[in-house]
Image 1 (tube, rainbow, N blue to C red):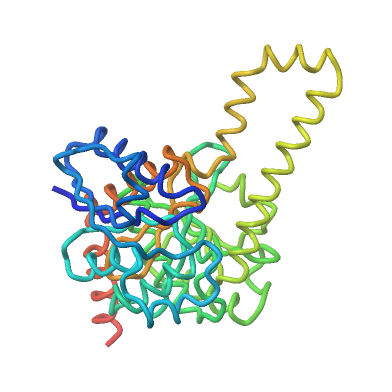
Image 2 (spheres, rainbow, N blue to C red; image 1 turned 180 degrees about the vertical axis):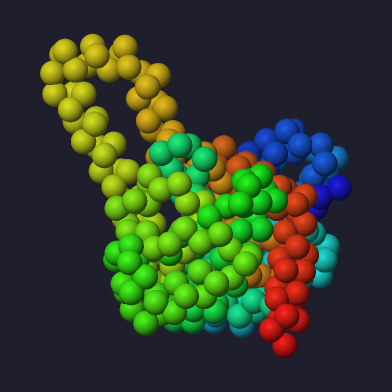
Length: 335
């Protein structure tokens, strides 16, 4: 049985979509048991009795606009997010899913779950939409601004194993986001990372990738530092919203357009889904000594369900142990 901890109070619309997404996952998958941490009174209107659901009450939870998660962690360990992470640390569960504030989850991951001893930096790795509908891992999308090339290489190895074991992609490729395709392009960090990625036998290196190709590239993993990755992710999100607004405006612009939209309803819905990250799942916090999934803050029940599904698949694939084995072997070869 796969045991998953859920932060019942994390997210813009918590607890309703969180509880409903949790129940949806329990009905869908018979091999999971879920412990949900949160305010029992606030969750009660949406909860249902289920033999594989355990509710742990705590009246404390983090607001989405939390500005000082380190202070909050030091002053109160009873927040629903921190209690879920502690359950993972104590091996009571196999994974955590939270839609709470991202930086608080990163802080909690660092202080409670801790990094894998083979990894020196963690990364926020969301699955972003792609033209072929398969999705791509983007990392780091905001955990660390200051990184070294070797940190990026180790995280690329982690992402490669996830793509192989969870997404079932044969020989997944890693692209380095840069301002040009030539090996000499970019900062010193980018040039050094290019060299390390090119020469590592555990990585199928695609080469440099310009941001204009992010949505259409065939590469499976898009790699960068946290500053660059966060800009890429937010630009994609903003562009998707903007395109939707332009399309909506044009449809409403004339009677003929409205009639045409009725005939194209299915195609337009498919277009919307192809740009919707919630169809894929949440962001994996790569590098922690346990599976932690950051669901979108605005998650509705289907999106949160996908975050739980993603956590389940990561545990089933035994990702942490497989990454550790590869990196341990690498260290032995270099020693």
